[in-house]
Amino acid sequence: MTDLTGDTPPPETTAAPKRAGHGLGANLLGWLQAAPLTVILAGFLVAPIIMIVIVSFWGATEFSIYPAFQFDNYEFLFGSPVTYRVFLATFKYALITWALTLSIGFTVAYFLAFHVRSQTMQIALFLLCTIPFWTSNIIRMISWIPFLGRNGIANQTLQDWGLIDAPLEWLLYSDFSVILAFVHLYTLFMVVPIFNTMMRIDKSLLEAARDNGASGLQTLRHVILPLTKPGIMIGTIFVVTLVMGDFITVRFMSGSQKANVGRLISNDIALLQYPSAAATAVVLLATVLIIIAVLLRFVNIRKEL
Amino acid sequence: MEKRTTSFYVLAAFFALFVLFLYGPTITIGILSFQGPQGGLTFPMNGVSLHWFRDLFQEQAVGDIWGAFRRSLALGLMVMVSTVVISVMAGLAFRKRFKGSGVLFYLAITSLVIPSILISLGVGLIFNQLGFKVHWATSGFGSQLTWTLPFGLLIMFAVFNRFDRSYEEAARDQGATAWQTIRHVVLPIIAPSLIGVALFGFTLSYDEFARTLLTSGSYNTLPLEIFGMTTNVTTPVIYALGTLTTLFSLLIIGAFLLAAWIMGKRRARAGSDAGQGV
Image (cartoon, rainbow over all chains, first blue to last red; front, side, top):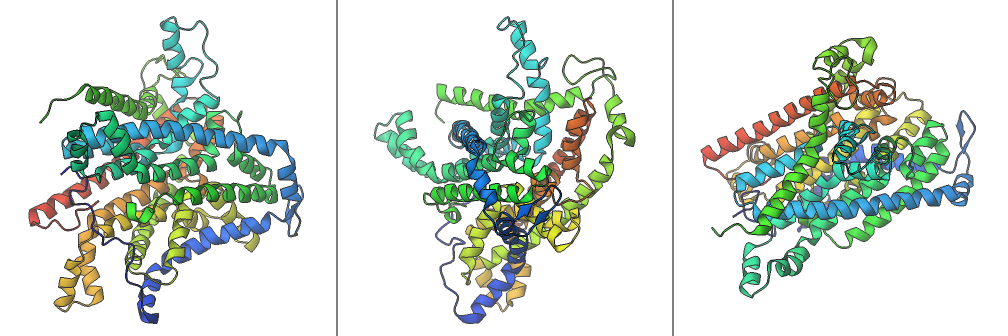
């Protein structure tokens, strides 16, 4: 057995409830136990979303905001060519980052799941991949500066090798550095769910494929890949939403030279234009939720845990 | 054992490169934080010194980072404890269907995927309009929970998916009350996984930036302080700070992993394999 968890794959007794509660008594305990979670989510998730939707119809002066019911913010948003450019840039970041994190994450997970033989080694290497996730993202972004800067390691090395004459200017503060940082920060979100699903693949299926004459590549393509789809979907949900909602990576890694939707919102906030920020936020949220809704059609998250 | 194929070595090399990619930059700033007093933000090293670490202890050089560190630590512990308690309770609730469980589950997922800046903006707006002052221990605390709780809940799902209910049934058959069953059977079995939930709760809070941005008020948490520094500090002192806080994170992670490992060992010696999942 190479299952990371050391036990057999979970039987059908999933957390997904089978027995429906009967009457008030059965519900009451559940409600009590779920109450703290409900309160937090109601106060700090649902209420803020409602507030943002409300404020998106408000008006703003230079210093303050006032209640109103007007569509000015949305009219301005949809009437401005900047909006479409910025949304396009956001999709571009999401798409490129997704493709890169998926290929890297899949390869890493595949290596861990099928090529590392000892379970201890598997856990150790897996932890090696996950530890950076628990350290500061901002520090991890800062740490690219000595690499990518004008006189950074990358430019120095390339010049030493005689590959370039002058330092490359596009290494730092560019789309390149933004995407590099995204891949650096978020590949983990692909590795973990994909690895998790791969570990549940019954090894006898792979043997069966081989016994029937499938090459390694054919097994990968026709057996492993389809069975890994749920993990890929979960990873995709994470990466796409993290990149779509980001504003800090783009701001820091592009030296404020590139924009995405998150930065559009944070710029408005900095100018105290809350209604306009709220309108952009509503459109962003709608976009993200639509993407998630589509992705969730392909996977049952609760079954995959 | 069959022989290693070529693809193994290719993949192993790829994996090694990936690990280098993950850790290389952090190690680089670790080295550069020992830069000499005249040194800059990039190589070459201009001597080796502890100059920049000393700078961290002089308030005028870097602002109130120690205050920020204390606040982040306190907030991290608050979020950690709350995340463990609330996640376990919710995890228990979700083992049975109750009215509204579906909605609550999708809310938790929404909480995970919603762009963080929306939480920041929305909570900030609510507090402003109600006339409350935003503070890291109130609005900041709640906002961070919307980030840590979904992780805690998902871990609890994973735990209870692998939970053998016959232990509970055995306890009940011997006359244990519902509370006794949870207290003396369920909780001890899931304890190692709770260390995992605690680790997520603390580290995600300690490093959280976007959701705390507009909700922490006039006293910054450490990540906010560090981000503020990136705009006006142009010396390796920021690397020294980065190195210290990363070391602190590693220490915390190490302590949690060690605790989980020891618990696992003890359990193995006791001869029960219950709750080894996750």
